[in-house]
Amino acid sequence: MVEEAEKFKEEDARFTERLEARSAVEKLAYNLLEMGREYEIEQLETKAKEVREWCDAVGLTATKVDYQKKRVELEELMAALGL
Image (cartoon, rainbow, N blue to C red; front, side, top):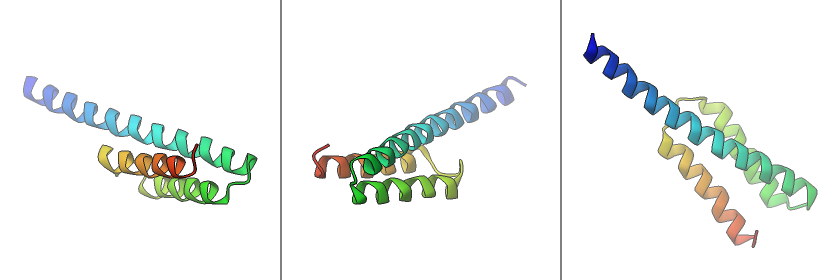
């Protein structure tokens, strides 16, 4: 019974990490989408939409690393645009 509880504890921790990573990338994508619309930066708007659609498509099946990669993509675009 203790082993089973430990197993579920580990699974819960991994799920929480994935959920937090997804939330972070979704929040960033939403903010960048709004910024792209406000300042008419089409490239930013397009990438933010792409990432949001990807998040919707994968649901919670992506790994924490997958979500982090998408966040890095957004951050690299921001850097390239001088934001």
